[in-house]
Image (cartoon, rainbow, N blue to C red; front, side, top):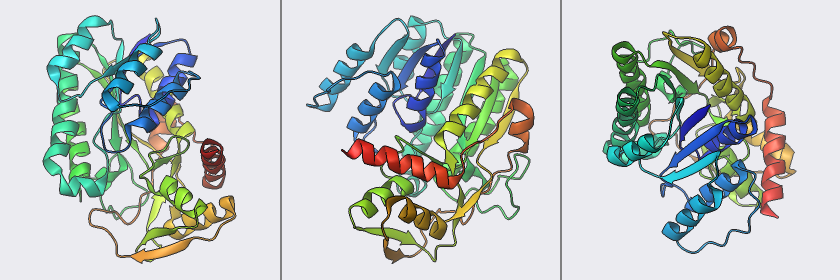
Length: 342
């Protein structure tokens, strides 16, 4: 099978590509190497994902990405530096390959930045996604997996969050774009019979996690004996999901789509284990053998107070079975972080 993966040089995408390649599939990776964080991180992700051992010497962004594309190209793997807002550029890629399924992970991420740049979030997360659906329609590609987010639930009062809950009250532009993707995706399923699964990810962490996200940021700062930003009183809580479990959920969704037709489903992928901010920090303290220096700050606009995934549907439909509890997941992440820092 040949899979087109958007955002394939990011955190989740690079792990998924690694899994697909090891299973003998072919992959087309589309990533725009956005300046949201250092592009060099994504280059390292890309090399890790294809088991390419290389002493990559960095110079400038354009040269580095072009070299990366040449270095990694093979019969099984192709990398394109491409923005999903550019439909013409996407179309050229679709013309150049036979594609069995699109796995759309690319997005402009982050709740807080979306409040500052809402129009850009709409351009990438809504218009960019629609470009992909338009091309799936034009090229008769009938299988599509899309990354949604637990943020669509907003401050849902019902715990745990189920896919049948009302999600008409997002509290950030980012969440609104993800809800829009689910709604518009159903239109393309209904009109053009594109089989589709929308996956609501719940706070994913693990090796290669973006450096701006809380767990990675806290581990780095605490390892350097620097203070960490601590928002609120520590009672906010998240359903943290280890990367291996997310990849398990995606690959099982792929199998389900390949063997079924007439599919439009929304699935929660979480751990079903809620961890407070205070508990998260103490778990990292234990793993690092360090005491956190906390800089107490007020709650941020757009942040939800709690997330908790009801994963019953994912278990029943695709056989999803998360296997990594938070303590072990943090231990694995810290081991990876310290190893990479050497």
